[in-house]
Length: 289
Image (cartoon, rainbow, N blue to C red; front, side):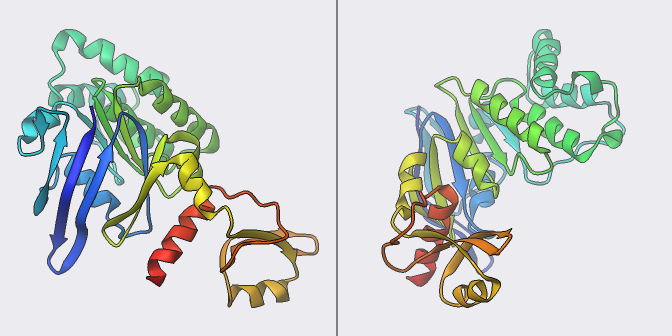
């Protein structure tokens, strides 16, 4: 079932965090990209029933809507951007507490907790206190509590922050295995490569609005004629920065390898656009409007 968001708005005093957002989220893995303050976290907190929208509607299939949050809460797993648990609890105890809050039947609690720990490589740390685990392990515990109970809607705000490269790869596998064709996984991340390698669809937000939504290949192709990559001296690089938007650069022996956007079609380059290119291109165009 699709989640259909219509005319969703939310303001905090005079700041419009969401401005008449319209978005359809289909079963699969959907990524949200956008700069700080774009409205991603506000949208996710509304979907997780933590915040109430000022106006607009959210429906899930023909029978579920966010006007009845109790029904929705039972189907949602949520990992906030800032995650914490009681430091004196052991990892296993912390997950049992979450299972209680999620109304997971007692007869299924042990199996669900063990499965969540196994998926997130926390089994060997089950007896360790939360206050004694590393930041990366704490993030894995956050992922474990989010997937506990097999929720149909999994919402994860910056889930891979604090994970080392090997853990990030494992996280992608967890989410790929978790998404069974019917569940919806919504992920917000500043690590564009995670979204590119994991998500089926991508929405780019800025200023409380959804600028574009499409399949990952469709979004990646948006900057296909506007990206150029060159090796240049530091002096040429500094000059280029004043005239073009630099996407990224890498030091090389004779200067820098620079990837940047051009105003017209890019000629004389074989640089294929990736999601970071198109994200930068779309945000730049939005600022210019």
